[in-house]
View (cartoon, rainbow, N blue to C red):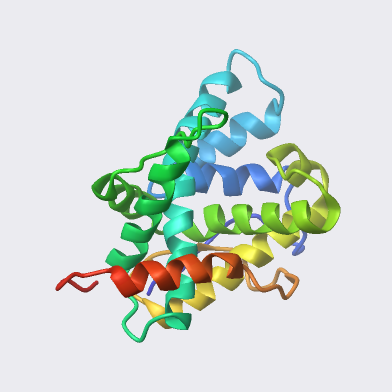
Length: 225
């Protein structure tokens, strides 16, 4: 595993201005360092929607549909060891596909991302090196909704340093958890600098385990990750 450190600290070890935009850029363009830098430069100069930034924010929204699917797979994979002795990427992706297909049928708020198993797997491969951030975002969103009735969005992450660090903490917790289970799933992950003190949190969704256990019991495949 070859970790790539997000350049979000200055020479004094402090967070750079608008650091969340650097993370957002990596989550959107995980394998394109130049695009990440360009995204950060543009957004940090003009953080409000404008002629320059609107196309960039549109790319973030487009990526989020696949990114959240990848994050869902990431979280499911982290919980697999609690329900099966044979965790695999394919099981996690199949489980996510089965769940989001039902969400897609919701007439009030249909799931906007991929639902087909192959599409879910493809989304994970595309974002696998930043999927822990997408999973961390969802994990923190669930916690804030449960504990404070607060709906997490990027505005809150940008404006509240503590929330930003919580987001990174959730993401790093999930990354370390999956590294124990499926170390090859995310070979070149983007990570927060070790010098940055992150809160110790338990990321993920324990609430999905009953459904995950039931799915695994019915799952049949001769393939393994």
